Image 1 (cartoon, rainbow, N blue to C red):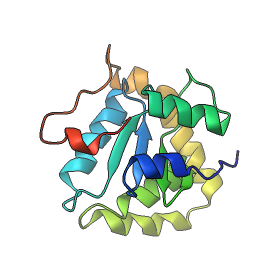
Image 2: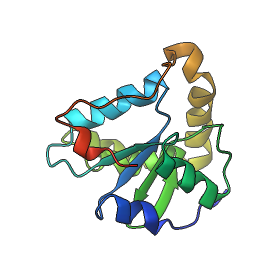
Image 3: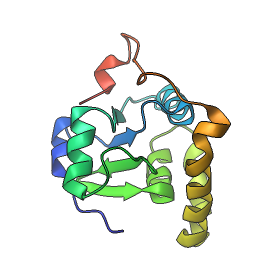
Image 4: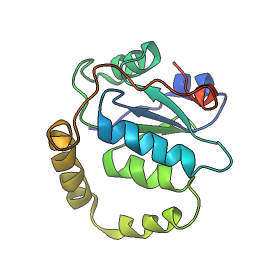
Length: 145
């Protein structure tokens, strides 16, 4: 599936890149906390797909509003999903994480196959929350939507 540009998210984040994630997924929420701790310049912004902004994004993209099988990374209006989104996001983290982009030489079909396998099993392997991640006061400004 090809996703369309989404300038609404970019505008909502004051021009910075945004990671849209499943807010009740422990793996996803853990990755957000991990990324925040390794984004020293605080360039990344975050929104749950369950938020009004996330739901509007899914609707604009023609995606289901209640089934979340990927996280999305919106950068300069361009939308990336699955492994492509992950590779775009790690560029913003401190060393050594940007080096993981070298793994992008693996064919996308194979990368996305592995990504989808983890995504399908993430609740069973990592659990889920009853409610979306609530950011602490010191990082709340990085969450939009």
